[in-house]
View (cartoon, rainbow over the protein chains, first blue to last red):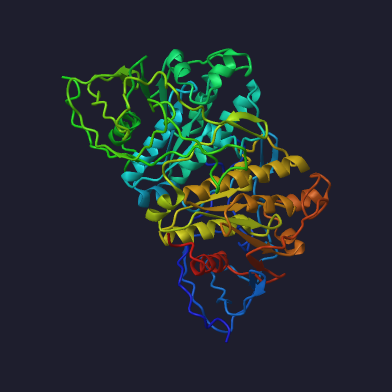
Length: 312
Length: 312
């Protein structure tokens, strides 16, 4: 009995593929929109449009490929090779060559040569709809000890209580993984921020409210991250806490080490901090006075609500 | 009138913070669990436990800080400085120094010195619950032209139709942004895969079903990515398509360029492809025979359903 196992019916709708550069993501490049043959699965010559809605059902006796799950060949999973392609000329068995096909235009970005932008079948707006939120980046900046991570946590908790999906990219945490190859020298700090900006962009595109929490001492890199995102999707929150307050808190004991010369290039001590100029939200705190993390998170949440980020 | 604007009431529950290394994320390090003073916001000596549930309300006349929104000082947003901290000894105005406090233990990971793992207040399981899915990585590997990106799109579409949140990390797409500084030489290829693995890990931790689609020609780097994730959260799908088939398809015209010597180090031509040995799913395709993308996606979706990834 081949294919007799009860299987779910999956409808699969793929729009016409546009293998050109997305406008919202990625850098400018020289690729142009071309008719495509649906990558490896298209067939026949000329332009192939994809806009199919083909339910897949388990039936007996059709077998065009085999597959393994966890190393064992599975003889109960062979499906009818439904032609998902709406092009009536297509032939499933003619997939090893496309007469008259056009070659997809690859590009060069930075050091990456011959790459092609693959536009995804599911758009950001479609991911946002069930989440009832707008994917964006909340970029929390400020001196060490200004309360960035604390605000990030309170904000994440407050938004979760409202049923919103957030994810924190904490500068220190990302240095445990993705950025563990980077030191604190100037070029590595810039690269640290560039990578976090790029990852935050991906999270925002996924529909997630991404909370990035890092010192970002120079103005230029966060501004570069802002420019990666569609207008309005980058919300900078500046923890405007005087150095004196941060140094008095010194939760990690790093200011003490920096003052003793045991850490070099420490922001605020022997490395500059350029306060951001374009922040959407500035949270001032003065010596001897501070709000609770919840109060501060509430300010940011109100901003998000008032500006339509908490609905799709 | 200060604080008279109608504002939403936000409840904010923060559990006790554990600033030690998370077991599920990050590399091993030498940090130990310490009682903490809630980073910058704790106060008083000794251990401060956080488990508060404090509604924040707009009231008049309380002002401990000011803040700006889009460059304008907002005089209507000052909140009562609710003490979110359950420690009755805490004093909000005593936040510039913690007598008797313990210093949080920082660590070194790779080139990153003096960093601290900040555990987030919202856990992966909490993010997964409303999504009704298990955050994981579906790692699609195979030769250029084997249909990785096409499967990724069909899979993303199929899962979206089931109300699931996915995000595609396409090897080529990530080279437009995060990895645009990397070339195709051996060490850069390894770094490309390492970074995608680290980012995929973050997406899985966010609760997203992350679909990574890249050639990953050598066995070692994907195995390293697998080891980053909790057991079962890395699902490798091998597009087992003969080189002859991929070369006949050649959707980007790259095989032709490689055969002509115009691209050096091209996987399958003058650079090896090591077929993975541990793949959870192997999709075989033979010359002259191929399934539709929907059929292939359906196989993967069935695997996810049968193994509990499509519920929380």
